[in-house]
Image (tube, rainbow, N blue to C red):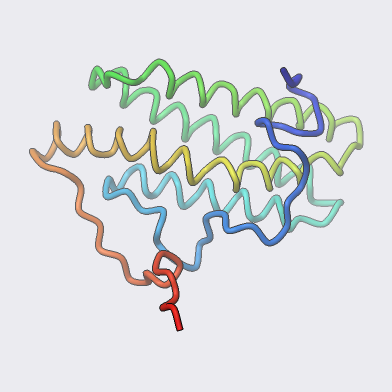
Length: 168
């Protein structure tokens, strides 16, 4: 088991460059529940900002991400509790684990270990697609069904990242 202050948060084995994490230039991460989609857009923008922050801006970028993640996860946790979402325990536990990782890296950055921040951003970009695809999409579906009477509908503007190139 990894400690919250390890250099490999969220079970990540080190920085990965050139991965296909969620990007802001397409809308493949949209789930069809607008309040959640807005939270995700803000979260991803802050993760990307942390990944690209120069050393002198790392602490501020990480603090902004931590503040956003607390609010983001808190909103989702509240939606799950208020709507009696059946799978809320594991979802809430995952949010708590990610916050422990963020807070562990904040402690390291406070000791001037700025190199811990970029692996965190990389790990979050690796973690987020699976979290959104499985846990958040189920919650979005549940909330839409309860509040709107049907499944969420997502219209995508750009689908290139999700379409395999034709064999040729």
